[in-house]
Image (cartoon, rainbow, N blue to C red; front, side, top):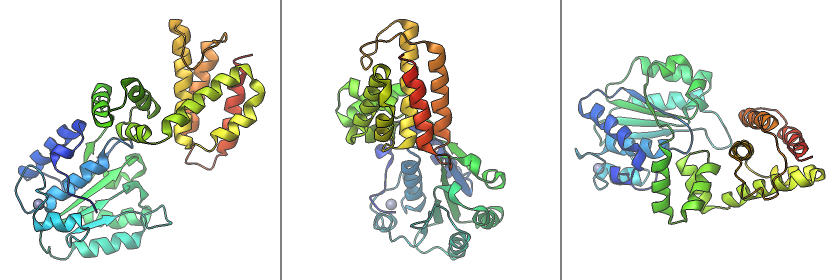
Amino acid sequence: MSGPSLNTSELFPWLSEHWSFFMQRLESDKLAHAVMLEGPAGCGKTALARAMVARLLCREDLPHACGFCRSCTLLAGAAHPDYFELQPEEDSEVIKVDQVRALIAKLDLTTSISERKVAYIHPAEAMNGAAANALLKSLEEPNGNTILILVSNNPGRLPVTIRSRCQAISVNQPDPRLVLEWLENSSGKAPEMVKTAIRAAGGSPLRAAEFLDSPGLDAFAQVRAGLATLLTKPGSVSQLSNELSALNPEDLWRWLSLCSGEVIKSIMTDQPLKWLPAKPSLLSKPLLELQRLADINRQLVTTQVRGDLLLQVWLIRWAEQGI
Ligand SMILES: [Zn+2]
C-alpha cells in the first residue's frame, strides 16, 4: 500500500456508519478474523479497506490510524512487515493458489511491529477455485492475531464456504442527495454538470467524480447526440456504431439504457428533452424493450459475446423508432 494512512475525516461522508460499525466491533473485540467489504464499484470500498488496514496496524489507540507512528509511516512507505496485499499479478486476472499459499506462510510467522498481521485481498472474486480452497483452510483455523480484509464487487462469484466465514460489510450506493452535496463541494462544478455526472455514473459517487475530471461527460454527450441524429438519419448506424465502440462498453450500455429511460419519461410527462430537440413521434413500449435490452447487454460485457454486433443490432432498432 502506498500513500498516506487515511483517517476518518478523510473518509467519504457516506462511509461514516460503516466506520463506526468497524470501530465498535474492533473495540469490543468482536471483529471477525475475516471481513468482506462488498458492493458495487465506485462507492469507496477501497478507501474503507485502506483506512481499516491502517487502523488495525497503527500502534496508537485512536478512533483512526494516527498517521505518524512507526507502523503508519512504514505502511505509507509500502514497507510494513506485518501487512500483505494480494491481488492478481501483472498480466493475469486471477489470484493463484501459489500466491495464497505464500500469504498463509507469511501470516503464520509472528508479528514484527504491530499487534496483528493484516492481509488485504482484492478483488476477492479473482481467486480461482484452488486459491479459494487454500484460503479456506486459513479461514477455518484462524491464527489469533491475523485479520483478513477481502474486497469484492461480485461476492456471488465466491464460494459460499468463503463468504460464510467472513463478516460482511455492505458498501452500497449512497443516498443520491449525499452524493450530490459531496460532489458539488469537492469538485466545485456547476450543479447541473454534477447531476449529469451522477446520472452517467449510474449513481456511483467515485465514478461520477472521475467523469467530472475526465472527458467522460463528453463521451456521454456524444452518445446522446448520436442517438438524436440516428432518429432523423437512420442510415448512419454503422458510423455511429464505429464511434461508440471505442467507449468503455459498460458505461456505453448504461448510457443507452439511461437515454431510453429519459425518452420514456419525456413521453409520459410530455416534457421535451434538451438533447432530443426535434421530438419525433416515439412510442414508449419499444423504448422500454430497448432499455431492457441495453441492461441485458451490459451484463454480457465480460463474456465472449460479440459486443460490436450487439451494439449494431441495438442501434438499428433505435433508429427504427424515428421512422
Ligand atoms: Zn499510527
